[in-house]
Length: 482
Image 1 (tube, rainbow, N blue to C red):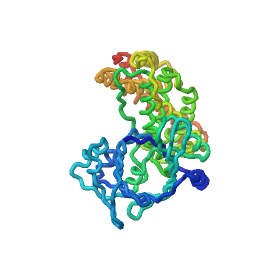
Image 2 (cartoon, one colour):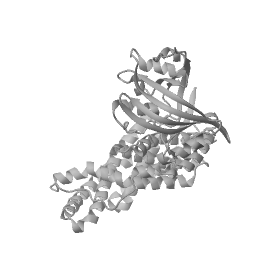
Image 3 (spheres, one colour):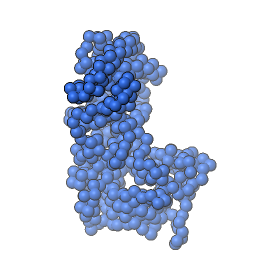
Image 4 (cartoon, rainbow, N blue to C red):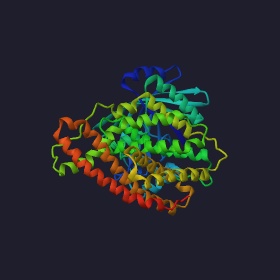
């Protein structure tokens, strides 16, 4: 079977109020003690599988969860166990044979031996809620993840769809988000438990994954699947940044890449569906802007700053213009979680449209490529604002090409993207120089080292423009794949 659920982290200040809201007369409270199994080399985790044996009150259950869409949908197969009193049962893979998740388990496990890796100790308060269009199980978990002598606290609220439409589940969750300030978290207990066992807080930064659209797909279905693909990257990175004290610059970078892809999908493909709200693009743009300064400084610290140090400015540091809202604070805001839910609800809609996707994508690709070629031919005469606009168009063209790739010939798509890559890289390097100049111009009047940096950057800017001219010239001869 497939389970559909949404999970949220509960702010400590609201946990008591939420507990009272869940614990109505029809609610039940049950202690849960689970052990999760894997091989010593973590074959199941690498395959996106989680195998657990859990005591739920007095009953024992073995559950296998398979890789899902990275957002709210996973394969699940559950088997009740007969266990003698005082016995700690081991996991038995054979109990899942003959199911899709069980087949994936056998393939991943091979000849590996299972052993307990981590566990959970949770008190769950749960009840069924009947809302318009759905029946949902609320489960409020308070307790801890446990691995050896390590413990991480858990305070989560899950909404599992028992019947009805995913969009109705989202509508119900949205009301609880507004009431209790919940933040969406797509990380599973298994993912976090595996990290705890390894002694790390963060997973690998989530990168964009290839998208395979169905043959002869209609425009609305294609847009929904594109948005789902983008959200998987965005929400994986946003969940870590929002809920962990320390994160890596690459996670913020990949979050911003995901947001760019999401904004491109809405801008270029949004007109194909009547269900797209105009304020989504604006809200994503504002969020992207709030995350931008931190990422720009990280990028400069890794690229231009070492070059400046090597050029003689050994004591130079990047100036801070003004305090900026932390990325974590922006991602924890209720408005941000509500935005994610609105996009999820749209991506889950099942309606199709009568318009074929390939011709619509072809038209949009041709228009965008025409704009890029014109900008590339005029690059030497453009001002920096127009050059920045060209850089953004090149990125949109790349993302749109990737979205539509499966509807066209793969080799021709790959050849086109190969032509596009040097242009995007050169324009990105030019943009880094422009960003650095803007930073140091504020500090230059009072800092001789900043004046040195501006002089060095002036030469670097000329070199960056020359590189752009070289790589943009062949772009006009790129063969469209559409």
